[in-house]
Image (cartoon, rainbow, N blue to C red; front, side, top):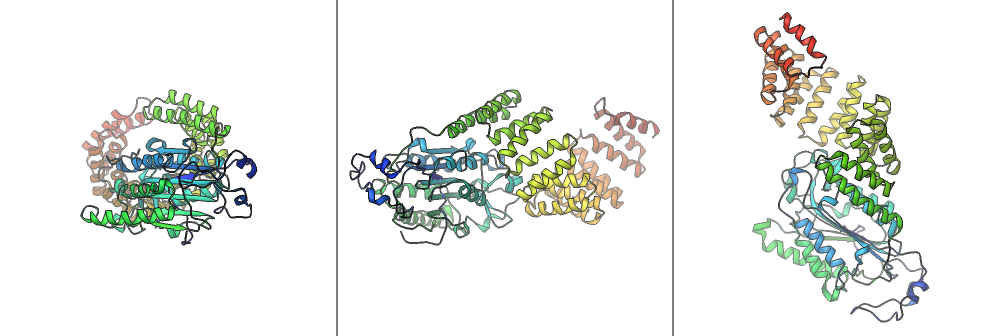
Length: 577
């Protein structure tokens, strides 16, 4: 295989792991090493196991694969009837595990689609919980990922996981940095093929964090981190769209040629040509040609994905089996949470943790449910355990910080948020939570700095402009506070909170009529918003309309819970009007 620019091939991750047995032991299990069970495949001779040869020249001990496909998402703005991405993953999985195709053992191949393709589960599978525990230096790993993606305001491109939140792209989506860091840190295999098929079809209505889709920015293989014996395949050039599963269908068809014994480079070239033909022939439908890319730093003989491995595993290690068993409880718990059955979900989370005490996401989610139910001490304990198992996850520290804040431990909470910020300074939840803490410490300038960062990343978020406006007002910059208050209303005219903040900012500026108009819109949007009625009452009073001031104050009192301490004081004010 000719050498390409150093890169990693992005596919569904398939890792091949070899147990630590010697070459002679491996060959002893093969009665006739020169007789191949499949046409075109030749088993290596003993002398080919020379330890001085590169990984690319030595035989493949075991083969491992991770196949990921997402067509359904928790995020409503990504919902569609297009199932091509999950279908592409299922098709690639069938190819890999076919005796006439990839010849991967089903036991050594993981398929994650839709609900099971959460960000955490994908990273866990590529990391120490599965692939990192299984793949050895002489193994082959193949990873295939097919999902929606989109460019972001930081100049990158992010993959959508099942549980991604478009209001917090940088904290919930899969970045190439996430994938590469996880693989480099955990996987020992020296032969890795990474294939990514990423389309924008499911993200056509993105707002926060996304650039205009006419940029057509896809993954740029030249920006991938290089590695020894790695191949990166992307479904299109970085300035092109990827249309559905056209490329993956063509790649699978090419890889099946020669009874699966075709070299990866030859198969790719055939798939590339066919993909260009398919998208050019239907230019009226797809609007532009799609050109797949391959980058590699491969050394030695050409890689053939279909070549049989020397070994297959009969049983997975205990720690991996425990993770898989715990995973089933974890997803049962998630389903129960979505149905509002929190007590039943707690039982399943506990079973997951009992099965695999190091399952960090189960520890985090268990703690989050306990916090919702008011059991803060035990919730804090679960989050501490989650952080211990995965100290690099910003989400865990953010959740722990919120629990500490509710327990009155503000300094500890701030320290955890600062740690989370260091881990992921682009996570919107981290930025806003830390900003709130800074305002609580009477440090609005720091809060303004944090929220400016957030608004730059998510320029179309009404909520962020609203929070920034409040922080600016607290810092004394009323003119800029008014700019962002108006921007928040412009972005979401149906937000009562945005209208309330605009009214309050106008009050500071001295614009009583403008404030009254903003509060009136707020109570029209949310007639049962007690605070909006109270603020409107105050504004009517300042404008000299005592009758309307009494009416709105009476409404405020009626909407308050019976034991609310503000009720008696408001009644005194009403009596004095």
